[in-house]
Length: 337
Image 1 (tube, rainbow, N blue to C red):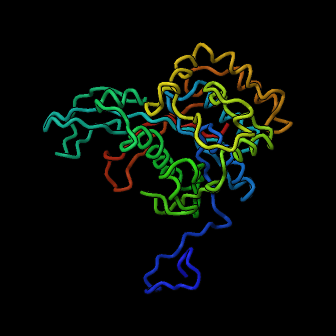
Image 2 (cartoon, rainbow, N blue to C red):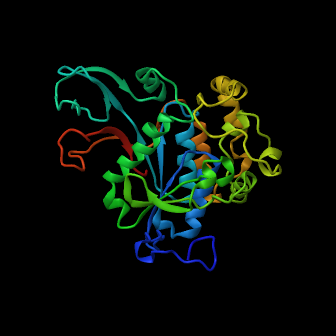
């Protein structure tokens, strides 16, 4: 049968690609940004699978709202979900042989143009602004290199290095919704992940309204990230108004924001402490037993990357192609605490 067309059959059934299926024993990694959609995706994953099968991954970005890693950690602690965090560190080199300038996650230089391993180090790129400086261009809707370099590619590298943890049927759960944009309106619930064919992408809240997402968080006693109030949202906007759009959980200085949306972002650092105090879950908690953990996390919110847990330096010894240099990467990775 052709999906959406009852009574019809494919012309060449033997050539039809089999549809992806969620396995009951899947290892589910929820990509959590701290935004409302990713938090509700985590709740949906816990309801669909056994808690032991669910974990979360957060890509650290220096331009995130201050306290975002702590917020993600507090939510995961309250729900009993292990959280992994990875931060990208890129190296910019100038090849001494062909003079090609290139960006790589490899700590050791290797020019793919001429295979030369000698290069002059130019700069370290560990933030979106560094990437803008090196590329000499801003991100756009057509070329969102900030997302690809600091979210998608970093998660994919972490997943490749964690095959043993992810077992036979890994799934990444994403908090995208059909009503958010025309592009997302075309997304399927389930498909193979690009460049990681052995992993499935699962979007369990595609049909949710914005209001449904906020209400689901409220039902579980989870206060939304303070960035929503910082950008002007009220309780009525979150829980009562059936509209889409509005403030989103993106980088503080996201280049796609309007001037009106940028104003609270610019003021966020000096207003941060008072907003955090207001959003101290208003006496609520993720679960009754996690209130102390949430309070401690919020009280320590600062504008540094990760403040909890042990950091360790992790380096892949050889890339998937067997080359000793081309896919080496150096990144900060933290496992569950």
